Length: 196
Image (cartoon, rainbow, N blue to C red; front, side, top):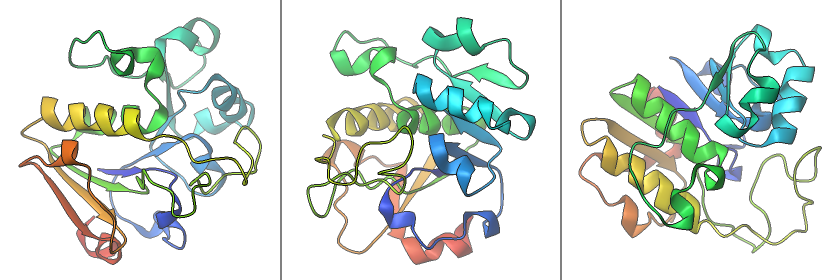
């Protein structure tokens, strides 16, 4: 199972040429086909449904938006968070599409490959392949603090110890300490073509 984030490290990767089922986030539908599309953001959910994507992919949104979008064909709720917690980062409303995509993959497959989960910006500006487009921040906006993503995805790794996760990244990328788990490894981004 391939999970595709929208970090800039995935620029130039032909997602459609990669084998196996795919989970993507938000505006990826503009460029590539995925089997499962996560839209935790209400504006993105509306954009995706208006574009007719739910005719091709299963689309997942958070429980909060279910009343508005839940009756659409092929629309699902994101999985429940698999642990209890009272921190702000533990609340479902504070989970974004990326962590939910990793969580869904962990419930569907014993082997999960991640690409485009950069976390950090190289220039202190937003790191997203769709920046400056509809429903995304402007290109000159300051980078988003990745601490919630790091924590939440780290919790997914922890809650699914039998699932093997491989993160494909550029040379020099720093794996967060919270992601140092026995079931998580990092590989060169160029190897994505051989391992999925």
